[in-house]
Length: 235
Image 1 (cartoon, one colour):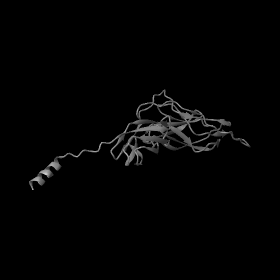
Image 2 (cartoon, helix red, strand yellow):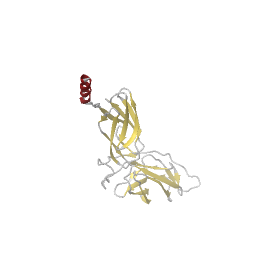
Image 3 (cartoon, one colour):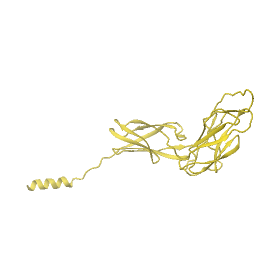
Image 4 (cartoon, one colour):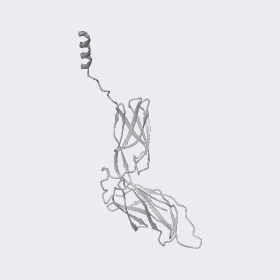
């Protein structure tokens, strides 16, 4: 009886050693620049984690994807969530528990329109994403202001409309500009705008992106007034 009591006491005295998780390695393999607007598809290569675990990928504080790994090596895919421009940490944790190194991704602005060609008098709808949060944005057509919109808390504005003014057939630029930053030209839109004529002819549209570095500060700090945002022409 005494031996049994002593054995029980010894068992209670043995501390429980917690599981020691691994530190995995993650690399953003696509896009190679590790920059882009919200909605960009990202590929994350992950190695060195504990096998047989569930993993979770974070973009800043937002969970962007999760899954399970048998071997501890896996590839995770996610789209950049709607976020104001700036630098975000990407990390992975598992149920082992494991953690990972931190890699960074820079969110940049993007501007789109609802048409790729238009005529004088047509209505064009412009939307933007990846701008600073809750800030005024001015939309320009061929360098002339067509009005302003305000981004939401995730840096988006949607549904801004303007009427194509009287002009000759040719190539024009639509831009969006924060109140304290330089204009962002349309990065993925080509449009040919034609003046009224009996038989208007449309030119072939093409896209010429013009990219420049974004600031390294964490969002939503504003850009320097002299810093140019990325973009491209609307043809």
